[in-house]
Length: 78
Image (cartoon, rainbow, N blue to C red):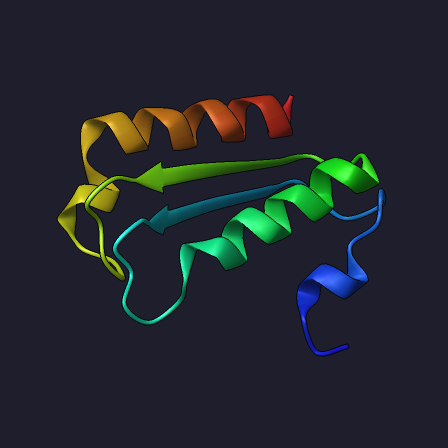
């Protein structure tokens, strides 16, 4: 019951996740699971996998990721 996955429903706000596929602290499967729970509930979520990324770092803030973040915010704020 402590997992956020157990509490997802269609009324949840849109969610954007960026997760490195080489994260040594938080397994990427957790983000895939949460994204799947959002999709199943009919809630809006986007998971951006940072290939080669660990638990943060400059590749999370490169132009490609910033563009995708802006696109997400544009979609949500409209």
